[in-house]
Image (cartoon, rainbow, N blue to C red):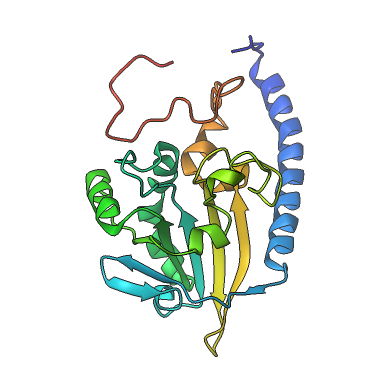
Length: 238
């Protein structure tokens, strides 16, 4: 961690006000970016997708649960036998889900997680983590492949992830997609984001970004320090 100057109160206030001007500009830019994001053209979803979860089989239309807007977190969980646990980084994101869903529902938004793993694997892990948010299986479906979060071995080293900018390197990658269902029942994809694009949706990262040590990931693999929340041990700070 770099050495910081210690300065009198009045000087600190002046330094903080200077940073505030930059923060205000960032806020205005972020508001503009959000407007641009919402004004993107929409892509009709023509394929029928069926998922399986606690309520049995449900179509994409049904998981809107009577609302017009749907957020899907693409949760990395491979159906292969060597994946007994879901991705620890996705689990880090998922620890933010439960408390916010009631507020999203109040604004006409449904939120779910979807993985390729079998329903029984998802159910076991969800119970272990103590989560209650809806988590569905797309096992046997093209859903993950069609929305560019799952890949076949021949594509692992090709730039096919994050809109053709990153080689996925593995079978599953992280992401989120947003859908809208109009009054006639037509479903549209309105937005998708992958890789660093989903940082915004991790509450813990937003807090870490304001403390002196930050994320502590400079020169390290992102989330190298992350554990599933039942795997941390009491220890001295890193």
